Length: 258
Image 1 (cartoon, rainbow, N blue to C red):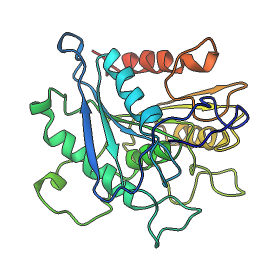
Image 2 (cartoon, helix red, strand yellow; image 1 turned 90 degrees about the horizontal axis):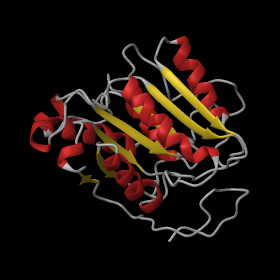
Image 3 (cartoon, rainbow, N blue to C red; image 1 turned 120 degrees about the vertical axis):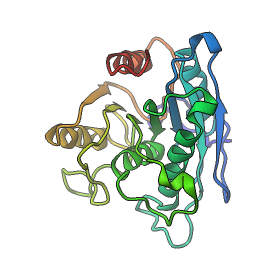
Image 4 (cartoon, rainbow, N blue to C red; image 1 turned 60 degrees about the horizontal axis):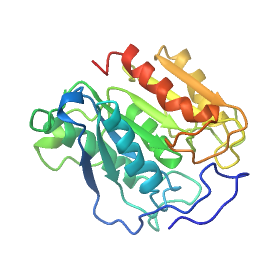
């Protein structure tokens, strides 16, 4: 279970289920009702600082929300915690390998799973938000040696949704982190963040939004006042809980919810 915390740090203060000690990455598929299926799918990357995976709050609950809008949710159980050769202050490198492989694998199974091969996106939270952004901007260079025919299929997501992401901002500089770049053909991006987030300050998303705009990438940014970290997709009477509705509107405008 996740550690207890308070509202100064997170919005969901109750303990929720976590997963760690992952040595074999997997994907878990949650399909919407047949009559609601839009053909769109999203790879879900839970957060946890690249140490753990917030499996319930930022995995299973996200899949349920996606199913409610007709989207197939596919949770990525990527390798955590960090290995001995991965610096504690930088993003771990193995999760990006797992995410790239997952996108290619989903695309290879698209017809079998009722998914449109050009409507496969990625959504991530906290460290998972960084993973979503890294996957969306590193599609032109696979980060591992190909192992089979699946790795010949594109690992470019068709859109990305990083939520209260960390690791996007360079330390002590108002620019994106050195490990990130925005190549030509970067897919559309929707960013959401809490204005009072002290775990991953909103500058991570703000600077990424500005960099995307400079690069000519379609992007939308929502920063919610009086909001901290870890709000997931739960609904309440607070303005931040409407981010999922805004995101669904954005997806419709981008024609991913046909």
